[in-house]
Length: 392
Image 1 (spheres, rainbow, N blue to C red):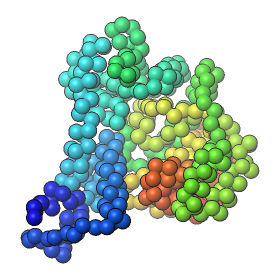
Image 2: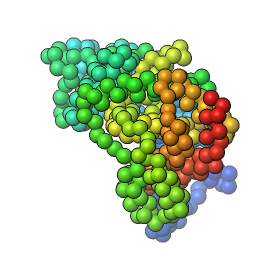
Image 3: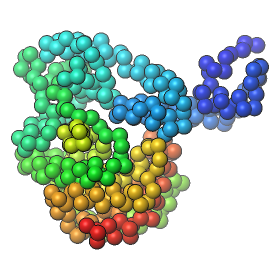
Image 4: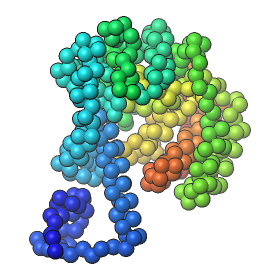
């Protein structure tokens, strides 16, 4: 019988668990049945998803210590995971070196900052797109926002004068690097207020974008009654209680026509906003921008704070302070209607149901369950959220 080194086969956390019961000798592990084999496969898939998530958080600026506390791993384990994940993206390095010649740039230092974006020589950012239509749309959005004095990255034309380069079925776009970085301290009240201001200023500029170009018109209500509902039925309501879904969808339907619609960012979180010396320095990533209810961005951000992996979860009091800070910041620039304020809890709950349905659609039941937990947290805070407005 051939023996293998468990250290080379088993995940570190599993090995440590086994060592509590047996170590220093040979251990025979019998073959499992098909069901046990499926559990092993599912476990491996979950580990792969976790490792990819760790790498993404690393790119967003989380330290190894923070990631270790979030995922209950040692710092050496986090470093090992990040190193392995980096290998997946190293094949892009040679291609990027070739791409940069179209701009006459000699790459000296390359740093991946997102799965599809690289910082070049501390001065530029190169982003890859697989959709020409999406890239051209994002360029146009950036140009309009720059006209409105909104801090977004300025494009750098290639040597040919073109705004982007097509290479091997992909499209590459180079821009100036904005100052600042993503925030990782999501519990800062002042930063939450600034985020409210930033969302409002962006919404004001987005009104002009909507006047100058076409955007996809989406509807959270149609999503709730469409693909979200279908995914939950397919799951046979094992993850989300049908009564919770029906109640939330009905609440949204009652107020939906009264909620202002316009172009929104659709992916508002600290990772898409840059800060320099605690001041907003730039907006990034307009891939999901669309027409929808205006408060979607506010609700997405606030609900996202609860879903964010942190060393310590928000307590109710802390999170409600963030709700008040964001609304205060937003209304210092743009007023919300009474209907919008009343609908904020419901829209946040819909967003968490949306996430649960999305994760169920990709067979990620753990994250679907996590989203449902956030749903319940918000549901239990409904009256407290509405009470925050009286303190503004």
